[in-house]
Length: 570
Image (tube, rainbow, N blue to C red):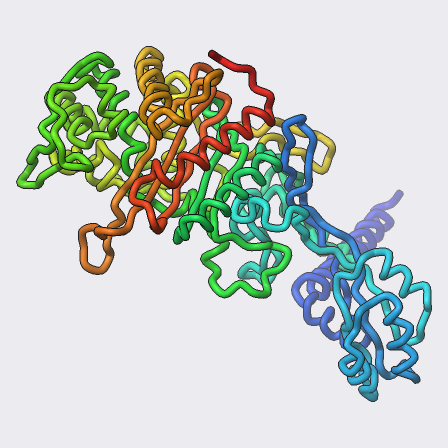
């Protein structure tokens, strides 16, 4: 081959490459840069706009037998539309469609009679059977289009925990609140229109592969047990109704693993129907986003810190004079009465503020604060929910004796409910700080799956310490709580109530007649399967949590014991 031939071949190849680059560049400009503009122009030329096929990963509850139960998934159906300019007899069309749908006659006739109009939407989210039946009629001017949408089969079941989807800043449907938001990257899918843009998909795929790493979508199976969740929600509804609480919430968790069986709050909502929502604050999960002064349920942790540090033992005694003064401020027992020389057990059985303040004085403020910070107060738990807050524990950091003393009985520091149950779980699991979580298994679209991973538990108390405190809390239930009337003969239960004054944000200080009631307990106490935490804000008609939350807790305990067929432990 001579040099002229080689040169011609090279010029031809270069020319072909240049033409290909020009074509690709033009396609990129038309389909990517100006894609939306041309798409809108095309939509205006057709009877109906281009319809997107919505897709998204699912969220599944897990039954006690390991069976997946849909919590959030995608449903397929149809949208009904008409082209009025193709309809000759609106009344006949209305009568034909009325066999399958409940339509407002006047509204339909009005839409169907618009001369020259090419598109009117009649009804969205029709059942698949109804849509196919209407399509089979083949009525001129009547169009049935495939549609997909998000549904929540349990309606309001675990609503704040599951979350919702909504339009984001780019006007695209995305997870908002709850697990829908937290696992957005996993659940999101590429939404394909009926006329797929090949080059858009190509460039999008390159971007994801090169810049975003693993772009696999998938489903998430969570630890929430639907029957247990419904038990908890019914209990909360009944309790709120009885005591007219401003708000109420509860969590049921495995204290050893951090797996959450149930998590709920009131008021709540139905994510399938948001039409009547007036305050978007209802979508937020107060159990991870709001902080409260929890009151006396914190006292067992103070007792544990005192025993673990060596400042006291479970059999120590002290002289209770009914009050003490620190930095010019008086700290009193709930009734102001002195008890004289009494054992540590009575601090928990009678819920004595002066008693836990005494423990702090023996430990030293710095040592006490260090223990409480180890319990996870003042830090996020790592739960798989968005917008988790750290709580307010400034009084632990200042280490002023009066502020630390009030912290010892749950006032002056504020924790989220999830922080609270996490901290209290160290008493139920041998002294380990766990990570509360809901994800159980991630199932990817490529057919692979993996167990959800969370940090390993951290030891914060000696096992001997929590054994001592557990025995004390069992005695609280057996002898002190409702004078021992709620004792279960064949099951050991460790529990404690809490009654905290509510801060007055306007006048400062605390309200004289408003309280937050809380309750926690774990069982069977010697080898706990569950830890339960309940609280409600400003219940009416009762001052102490033992009056309002003991029965709901015992009811839940019995339901869980029976449902899981837990064998007796004593």
